Image (cartoon, rainbow, N blue to C red; front, side):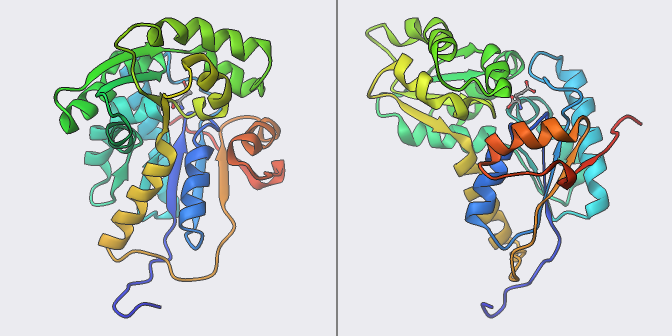
Length: 277
Ligand code: DGL
């Protein structure tokens, strides 16, 4: 152990509207394998992306509250829609526990990736409507030109495991081709939704070579590591098994979640919880 480092055995609590946020959990687990991770997917109420900011905020507060029994040292909001609309409410409610969202790290990665300053953001309707990515990118690069598009069908395709073949190819072309056809086309595309990295291949083909796809999972994991280090809260012990909580059908959580996590989840590992007060 490094001298002066405080060992914090408390877990990092991660939540999402469903299993999509397991891509963020995978990035955190890869970067910080010694940390204890607890993941909650509100699978019974997915999607959040088509719901109002008020409803999403209420659901997010309920999810965070359910995770408090684990006494986490940090909350990671692995959902773009929640990060876009509810982060200030969660931050105020759970201070001094830090609440990390995925929008700001994604915006930082996009600004770093774009040479032209023309950046496209694809996300759910809720994230696009709230404009959080536009604000976060402009805060870092005020002269950035940003185009946004809601691609709600990608969520359903990823949930079904339809990651290749004619349907995702056609959906990607239909949603994206025209955005990248103009003379002033973006050179970076933010995958501003947990589910979209799984469709990176058809998306990349639709937007063409030379466009960098930005996935916020990795940059969020870097931010988690930075904060833990700054707060002397790194866990310095052997890796612990992750814990999974879902609000519906553990079998489906395990089957679809394994795709997102990139590792097998057994239904018996998923605890069923009820978030309604
Ligand atoms: N987790 C959501 C997000 O990243 C996508 C799924 C949903 O709409 O709930 O925006």
